[in-house]
Structures are given as C-alpha cells and as structure tokens.
Length: 95
Image (cartoon, rainbow, N blue to C red; front, top):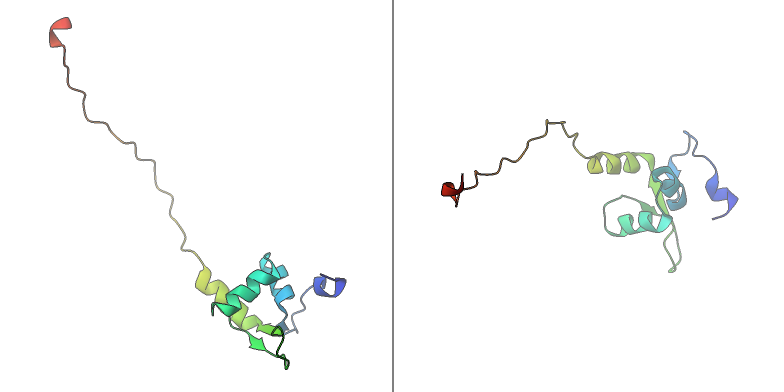
C-alpha cells in the first residue's frame, strides 16, 4: 500500500477503492475483492482491460453490506445451573 491509499475517506467521495473500503472495515483489500466476487458486496468494475478488475464501491453498497451482516443483539440472561439427578445410594447399610 502506498500513501495515497491511506488517505482518510472524505464525505464527498462517493466511490471507494477496495483499499479504502478495507481500511474503513479494518480488513484486507483482498477480503473486499473476495466479497465482491462472491456477490456479497456490490461494486462497479471501471476497468477497461482484461487484467484485474478495477472495482469501485459506493458508500450505499458498503452501508447495505453492513446492515445485512449486522448480528442481532443478544439479551443477557441469568446463569442457569445444571442440576444433576440424585445419586442412588448403593450401600444404604453402611450409614
């Protein structure tokens, strides 16, 4: 990564590179590309060549992805202790 990729994302930027999206999500750029290839994250290929695609991700696509992946909030419940069944007394005459 060069210094250009580490610039902060400005609100007026509507299209993000995979590197910028990766920095925002704190993952690698390859993980972002993998999500795009799997169809889990929407992106636009602005490349014209036959080599590696030049993906751009909209802020809306990133927000939609985060909403889809949000985990439900778990409610905290009191601890339940497992109660073992009573142990039979095999030697009642030894008491």
